[in-house]
Length: 117
Image (cartoon, rainbow, N blue to C red; front, side, top):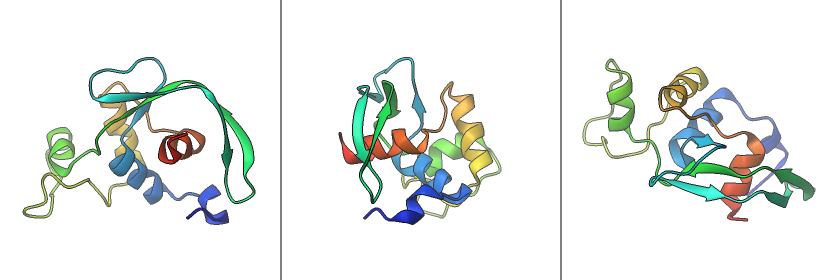
């Protein structure tokens, strides 16, 4: 479901995007990434045409275990080491991406990847 709130994403929502959809990078796709082709798609509730360049996005969510390897003082809920990491700040998500040589997807990239278009 997409509504007008989609355009005003909070820092926590961006952190959730990292957790659920991975981190993106424009230049290459390695074995754990999917290349999303450049192109136009219909975005938002008004289905406005949006164009994005080619980019790659992680195939799998960042897990609590992945994030703990990056930030040693991170405490994952017991038994949920393989679950997607949640409740981290935008800045922590951004730091994690940079440490991997990647970045967070922008809103258009996130939506194009999520729609599978």
